[in-house]
Length: 219
View 1 (cartoon, rainbow, N blue to C red):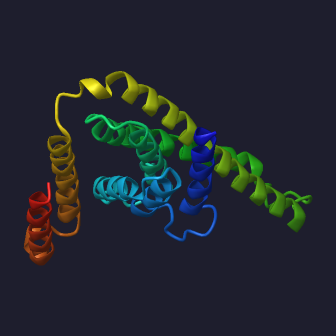
View 2 (view 1 turned 180 degrees about the horizontal axis):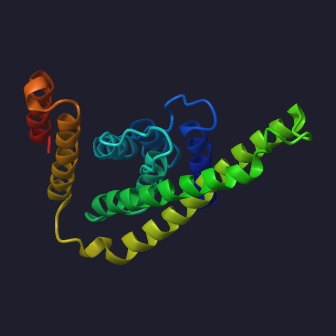
């Protein structure tokens, strides 16, 4: 039952990415908090969402290019981590989430191709407003099903993986979190380069460095 609810949430949040609204509910930090709240651990959900936001900020979805789907990555990661209290649950969940975000990106590309067969040709004399509206709603429905299916499958695989190898993870929780933050810092560094580099973003770098020091003191 819980897996079905998580899959439905993944489908709803996937719609926010492009098809419906774009209210930013699909951003990792928001999706993580919502998933954690639904599963009874909003703090862990917010933590994972924030960490994945660091990793995925480097991706700027634009045009028809393929990018990792942050919504799927976050919902899968949170639902995977919540299911276990072992030290390896968080890093394994983050890794599975990032991998499944790539799967989500491939599924979006496939959906776009499928939409090309759904939408009627402008030159078709039968392409009245009702048919166009039906095609639109059909594409939205397919996006929901895509998000739900990808999310549910990812959570099932992630939880199975954590159950098998989570207890044998060699690092403790503090060390694991520090390792994840290092990876996030690398991603933020790439983003800084894309925004003009250190010379043009000294203040941004200094603020990030200061926040990193503050964060380490809480580890």
